[in-house]
Amino acid sequence: CGSCWAFSAIGNIESQWKVAGHILVSLSEQQLVSCDNMDGGCGGGLMLQAFDWLLRNANGSVYTEKSYPYTSGNGDVPDCLEGEDLVIGAHIDGHVTLKSNEDVMAAWLSKNGPISIAVDATSFQFYKSGILTECNGTQLNHGVLLVGYDMAGKVPYWIIKNSWGEEWGEKGYMR
Image 1 (spheres, one colour):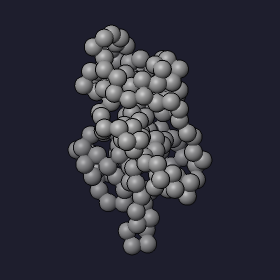
Image 2 (cartoon, rainbow, N blue to C red; image 1 turned 90 degrees about the vertical axis):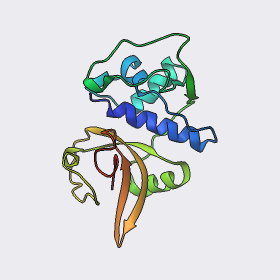
Image 3 (cartoon, one colour; image 1 turned 180 degrees about the vertical axis):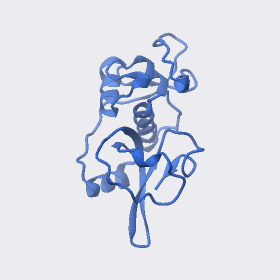
Image 4 (cartoon, rainbow, N blue to C red; image 1 turned 120 degrees about the vertical axis):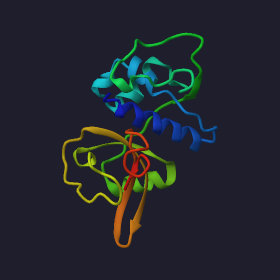
């Protein structure tokens, strides 16, 4: 299922909710995959459109993972659920678009927390560990969550959280 965009957007909201002083809660990617008609479910989507959909169509409300669990791992997209059994875990009231500038992104990350970003994931397929140095791609085809940055000697690197599970990369992360 090509739902990386939903995992990136929801991961961002979970992080921002915690940074804002709320309890950390696991939120529902399935809400976006099944309900967000501005994006394509398992066929792909954009994080910006996901934030816009939540604001315009869900009044900024995001359901908990517990009340609306992810079930599209096999590629099936069930109809959008509605009802009293769905528990709101967080609210958003807007979003910020940053310039594609590494200094701006690092400053934002340091001050405000994780950022939803699009990357060329062509070289991710065989990543196991270490610092990925092949960053020549220009085809933005995958949504991830930028969670940090660091240096190894004189080599700067970003730390990202991927949506491919803990078996991939460095327990679901990469440098």
